[in-house]
Amino acid sequence: MTPSELLLHLEPLDPLRERAARALVALLAQLARGRLMEPTSRQTFEIRRDTEREEVVSRVALKILQCSPLPVAGKSDGECRRYLSTMLVRAHIAEFRKRSRLVLTGDDKIAAMRGATTDEETASSDAADDYIERARALLDRAFERVLATRQERFREPVQKAWQQITELVFQQVPFNSILARDEGVDPDRDRAEFVRARNRVFKNHERLRISLREAGEAMTTDGSLKADEVEGLRQALILLFRCQNSPASRIEGQDAQQ
Image (tube, rainbow, N blue to C red; front, top):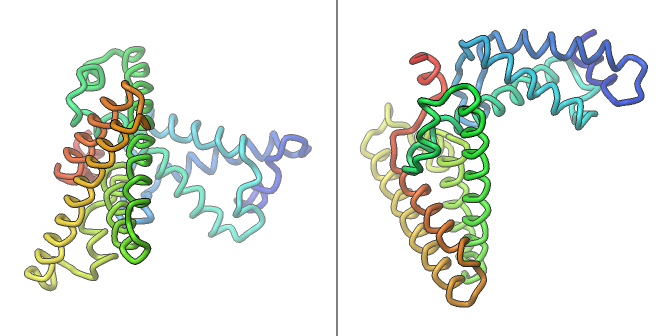
């Protein structure tokens, strides 16, 4: 089956579903062995470990079977391959993020992932994933409070800064890629302008972090946050600061070290 054909036959009652599912796994495995590209930053990398490739392929295949048909079903083979490659990339980055990024929080349970056994590692990885979800949910609530206090004409820059911060921290988009996209600067062409743009963006991010902290204090005062959420938001803001001010993690660099 071609990529386009197999995606058309993955729904539960389709008589060719079993055959299409086998073809899907084979195609995902083939794509995972090649060089993958993160679509936002355009960085490329390889998944070097066999166990990691198998895990990512299994996870993506299961997700596809659960949510078929995909939006690209029936489109060109090239579009289907690119869509599946992006799913592999995102699944791999999500796993990478769980295993490395949250060590910055100082949480002993999460930091212990590095020396854990297989069973312990799985449990710690799940804990890290839960931690990220809770942190993001609390930060989203604080941002909604910040946005609600802004006049309409001042909302766009705040939303832009929030998008940049969440891309840096939760999606691991390199800072240089964000500057190139949003500020149109390139460190290899005009270093001085690049530095000025970088400082402007850093300052905007700093202002937003202060606003998020103040929103959290207001939400604590008016009872919008429960007692455990107050501490959770405080830790999430620490995570935001530490992740954003740490060297940008690159997937291909991590793979090369492995």
